[in-house]
Amino acid sequence: MPVLNDNSMTDQTLPTGHYGYSATRIEKLGATEYTLVTIVADVSGSVVSFRHEMEDALKEIVAACKRAPRADNLMLRLVTFSDQLKEMHGFKLLSQCKAPDYDGVLQPGGNTALYDAASNAVAATAAYGKQLADADYDANAIVFVVTDGADNASHSSAGDVRHAFAQAVATEALESLVSILIGVNAQGQGGYLMDFKRDAGFTQYVEIGKADAKTLARLAMFVSRSILSQSQVLGTGGPSRSLTF
Image (cartoon, rainbow, N blue to C red; front, side, top):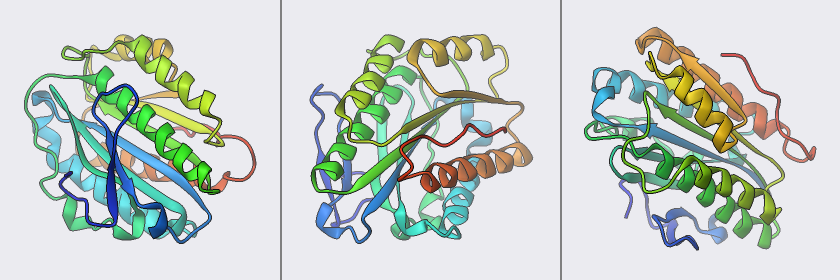
């Protein structure tokens, strides 16, 4: 079971047979509509120097979203990846996300299975979105993939990520799906990540410079604003507009 789950959640498989996901049981939901948020964080060895700042950013994202008017309509999933994908918690009601849980949640080491992690994030979002739709809930989603470098460990490809996006649209379960690829401390990898954004079909690519407390605090603000913007458009039939970092 993922590290930060509880008995209100259940494990799910994906049709691909790859790493699955977990999510809050439908009967535990109280609202009628939800924005599904997935944060995918690179924990390869090269992020060790700013892991604590990244954990602080995660805590601030949760805190900022909890202060928002639509806090009860948000669910958050946290995934980390190095050589392999690891789900720290599945689609969890924001009210159940506690800031102290994110202390020590990032454990850097290993290589970068970027494509595998991105593909799983999109497939899991689409699958849980369909479960919600089948139970008469309205849903949209936003996915953030945060990395500092190029893939060197995946079994899948950028094309597989694009296919996952296409499948997500084909289910017609999500009103809209926004996806943001974020390059952190990715000096020399900007061109590669721009190409990945294009080849995989992400909505937006954002690049930030040196990963220090100040820039990662700005990242937390950008992510929380993007989440709230996507939540606010649920019911309008379209996605939120891209925000500037």
